[in-house]
Length: 274
Image 1 (cartoon, rainbow, N blue to C red):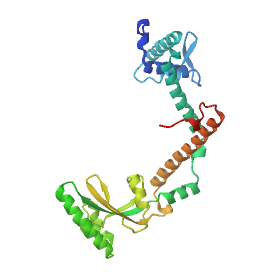
Image 2 (image 1 turned 180 degrees about the horizontal axis):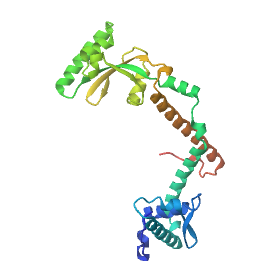
Image 3 (image 1 turned 45 degrees about the vertical axis):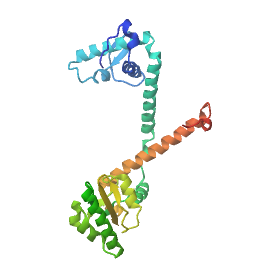
Image 4 (image 1 turned 135 degrees about the vertical axis):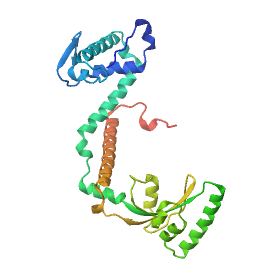
């Protein structure tokens, strides 16, 4: 850890980053460590502490740097800098982060979804096969062409013309070579908001035109990959996503429990939101 020389005259100019270093050092004494390599006024310096500084090459230099760092931390505490409001704010942030990490580790097994949970989750976000039709409208002339094309596309759809045929005829996307077929898609490889809009359509229904940037898009999902055929990479993506959602839900429950036990003034219900 870097040493930071501080003089008495510079005391009012100390920045939160230095305060943070002070607190991080104090945290080192409250958790298990490896063997002690030195002591500074009775405070131990542990083996794993000196190994955390890769910028210093030799072991003696690492120990010397750790001693200098500890001396400054001790002096800062003597001056009462650890009680400054800025320091307390940084301490609160670190404690919050440490608490969340501890709860996450303790409850990790609760976050992992069962096979049935993963199956139910896949039913909500399956891989769907999509036809995509794109019309560019980057210039005024392209906008006019796109508008005329949309009129013709709608007429053909009303006559029952297959959408994939219209994709081949009108789409300005590379997938037009395959009737607009973009293969199977999920929220991992497709804009999530757009995925759910397409997924909400009835099977084989063509979406209303979506204006995205300088282009118009129409979509149709026409197939859904079974859970048993879904690639392992996608199932891993869903599992991680479900673990995160379970984690958030459990931590919210914990927060509700803490709120019930706490004395909050004024009561939450009385606090006016802006």
